[in-house]
Amino acid sequence: MKNYKLYQGALITALMTSAIVAAPTVQAAKGFTDVDYTKEYGAAVQSLVERGIISGYSDGTFKPFADVTRGQAAKILAGLLKLDTEKVVDPKFTDLLPNDEYYGAIAALQNANIVSGLADGSFGANRAITREQMASMLTAAFNLTDYDYDGNLPFKDIVRNSNAYYSIGPLYENNITKGVTADTFGLKETVKRSQLALFIQRIENLEKNRVRQSFKAKDLGGDVIEVIAANNWIAGTEEEFFRVRLQNDKVDIEALHEGTGSFVVASYKLDGDENYEYIGLNKYRVTVTMVDGKLQMVCEETDELSPGTVLFFEEDHGINAKNLKLETKDGHTVSPKVYSYKPYRFDGWEKESIPSGTAYELTLLEAGEYVATFSDDAGKSVRVGIHAAVDGYDIYLSEAKEIKELFVPTKEIGFEVQSYKVEQYTGALIDEELLDVAFSKDGVTVKRVGTGNAVFSVRLMGENGQKLYVHGSIYAVSGVTSMYYELSTQEEMEEPPY
Image 1 (spheres, rainbow, N blue to C red):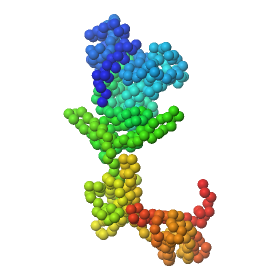
Image 2: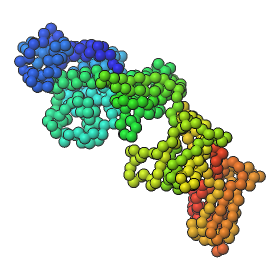
Image 3: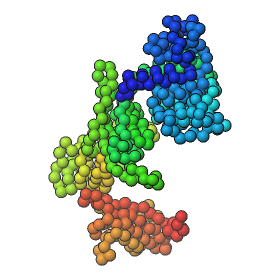
Image 4: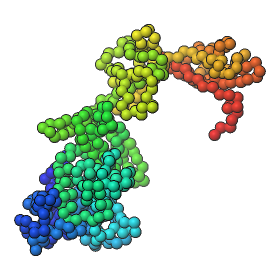
């Protein structure tokens, strides 16, 4: 979490040195003659004045409806973010020179991808900033741009999925901004001093209550960092309980709701030619809890593996696989501590894509070679070989349903087979017979008789010169053999390759 005292100090410094306030020698009045303290902005002005963050003019006014310029807004944001305004790269705005008052602040913000120029290539430092421009600056400055906002804004002047929608949405969601009316945001209207006071107060409250932790590339021995996996969704919902925000040299993790999950980061070194050299992976377990009404987050480095999952659909295998017997490849019973087996919930699936029948989820917590026997209460069963391998901090699964022979019915072939020829084996020993092929009026049976993984092609021939090809594969996972086939006509075989 950001240190609030340091944050407030930066805020005071930025505002007191900005041109948005009156001369620093002016003392703020106890009550400005032009401020309506019964309004929300009046309370914000009073709070900021009482803490010495902002002041008014020598005539006892605050000028709450005077415009704020783009340069003034830039200076405030650069100060709030404690950006280095000296060592900057020239942003190349046509109306900005290194000796201009706001040059350092504008350049620092542009270098950090927080601000951009106008369509004509200028920055427009002395132009009044619009509410849309201010929103864009704030969402970028305070890392709200990564919010996958999908809300319904009440403002009829904001088009859904527009740039304004994604910059204003997170601010509205966090109660930082409102509309000029109940249904109008006022995109092109200018930001007034009273509105800026409200923005400052609301940003203060947001920053004060945000729970975050940063992970920097340099602390992991690299120059660049990236998140390659994150388990951060609340079960059964499409809602995150922590959010990941990535910059080139750091990752920010922010707590949103209670939950437990993890994320994995990879770090890299960069040489002078911008080539990446992989340094390594680090995995962190994230625990977010609610204590006395406030979120607390703990991120601890861990070497635990993320489990792998197999889904078993009745539609695919023909049985209601309510029972499971799990063994190692060598036939030893596997402890329930190593796996879980339960009905699968289709949360987030489109209704039309949900398969018919029952569905179950097998989750494995350790790598290894497994054989799962799924069965129903009627005595039907299916064996599946499962290979669980570790890649980084995740367990990835490959599987094979036991199929020792294939039967291709005559109805599918389209003619009665009179003879066949094995055209090709790939992956099998040359002197080893791989297949046994038999045919009858009912169809063709292909059995595996050799060992090893391979692909094959069998040409089927009919009485009147018909030809059809059976292309297939034979493979084994954890000692369980599976076979697969598809059919091709002679015309399809003669088609030129793409």
